[in-house]
Amino acid sequence: MGHRPYGGCCRPRAPDQPALFISPAMTFPLDLQTYLICAAVIAAAYIMFGISSFGAALFTVPILSYFLPLDFVLPLCVLLDVSAAFTLGARFSREADRGELKWLGAFSLIGAVAGVTLLVVLPQRWTLGACGLFLLCYGVYAVRGAGAHVGISRGWAPVSGFAGGAMGTMFGVGAPPYAVYLTRRMADKTKLRATLSAMVLISTSIRTTVFAGSGLMTSERIVAFVALLPFMLLGVRAGVRIQGRISRETLVRVISLLLALIGASLVLRAAFGR
Image (cartoon, rainbow, N blue to C red):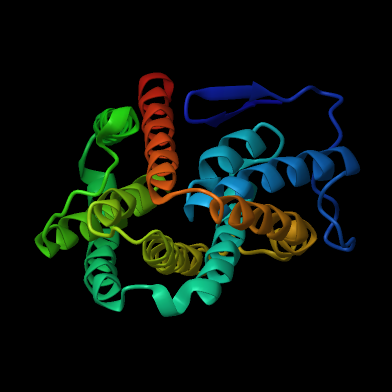
């Protein structure tokens, strides 16, 4: 059988490898081994999500794509992200800054629409690499000591919202621009996490609607999502407990490290992608 690409990774499927999809008449789409691998990856990834309010897809999408087709992984992961963001949003919704969300949300929608056009017009590899290089440089800069709160004006909200919306549509990575902006706007750790979590919820909800409209939210994806949901919740719960014991400076450094890792992954996808 052929190779299945993810970015720059192509994993051959052995001829005798058992199929991961069962017939529509059956109810569970994963074999036991794949299910256990997915459960472990998701639990670990959402510990990080519970700490920083984003970043799970950095781990879940590329790792699970080695075991499942990408068109199965993406809808599954966006359902998990929406649920995780809703869990944190419900918990911290009172602390979220609605003024920031209005600006970010509005321009995120504009960016998402523009991203569809940019995806067709611009050379995707170079655009992806440029975005990744920026995030990598910024993340390294912040991790090395620039993560302390530095005030910036709300005039940067349209830029952040538009960039996040466009990146989410083009590359499936929309949270980093929101994180860059909000960490420079908010000194309060609880408000920062709440607002970022709510923005991730808005962004992933838009993506979920797109997947649903394209017919990718099949019953098999829904069954897999329900079966893996408890592991996501366990990871988020553990992450929330951990973040409650760390300072805002540490939280910003964690977010900055995630930005650097996401940037590095985008650069690699651009360099070795097909």
